[in-house]
Amino acid sequence: MRRLTLVVPGLLWPAPQTLHPARDMPLAALSRLLGRGRQRIGPPISHENLLARLFGMEDIAPSLAALRRLGEDGGAESGKERGEKGENAGAHWLCADPVHLCLTREYLLLSDFADGEIDAGEARALSTALNDDYAALGHFQAATPTRWYLRLDRPPVARFSPLHDAVGRPVQHFLPAGDEAGARRWRHVLSDIQITLHHHPVNQARAASGRRPVNSLWFWGGGGLAASARTARAPCPAVQARDPLARGLARAAGIAPEMPDVDAARRTGALTVLDALASPVRHLDLAVWRERLAAMENDWFAPLMRAFDAGGLRALALRVPGERAEFALTLDGGARWRFWRRPVTLDDIHARLASWHPFSTIPESG
Image 1 (cartoon, one colour):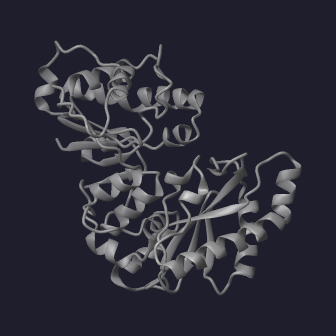
Image 2 (image 1 turned 135 degrees about the vertical axis):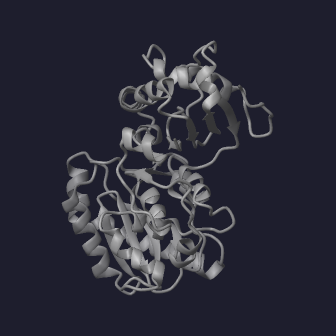
């Protein structure tokens, strides 16, 4: 029986002032899994960087934009780039995600949009306007209402900050940097795009109806696909994910990604990415996080615990990236017989995180 690897971004609540986010939740299966396995807490890591590491990309800076674009619906055609073929061969990509900028008394703060906040018609109209006005820059694609891309003929001469670094923080600390002339050019591009978006009828209508306008884009993850595709190596024989970056990494590694399914994951020893908790964590929506965590307990942790008890699951690795720390759990065959070990609640893990920092040393449990 093969090893199942679960990547669950958002399983740990990021706000330390919320001491018991999972209080009174019936998470018996998750608690038993946490109690039986060996726990490790390590330095913070983003979801994107953890996935890149799992696919063997520690020694290069992969283009997250090109890989995420490859994982979008219809992106399989772009997989021809792995063999340097197809219309997109040699193209360079930037994520160009729609964002909202809000001026506070001291700072200009950035926030992203949750699924459902922008409809497909609005995204289509805005991206069409950008292509009309900035054809010389490249070609904008709205793969989904909240995930946009810019296809370039040449690499951008600037360094861009990931969106997850900039959300909720002063924008001026995360603007394009690096080469002075290149950074200055991309800052001007952003300013011009903000003017175009501000005057667009879609945003005028959104503001009139009390909805946040799409008043800027956030460029990040730039590069081409070729180097990443040559390096990508899948850590498991199957990859299950809804997340487009994970699906793109699988395609770059020559694997057709599947949708998450607990029985198939257990049988095949898949790398499975469960990202339902990522959005509520990013937007600090505790009610939705608890609702989705309860569903994950029922749909994933409970079946896996039953399979582990019955001998149908021999090994499990749980990886939880986060901005406070990375949490890892490992269960092997011997853990099945550690029936005397007491369950460990998710809030027990939160309590451990409260006393941990990257320069402390906390040994593995178990």
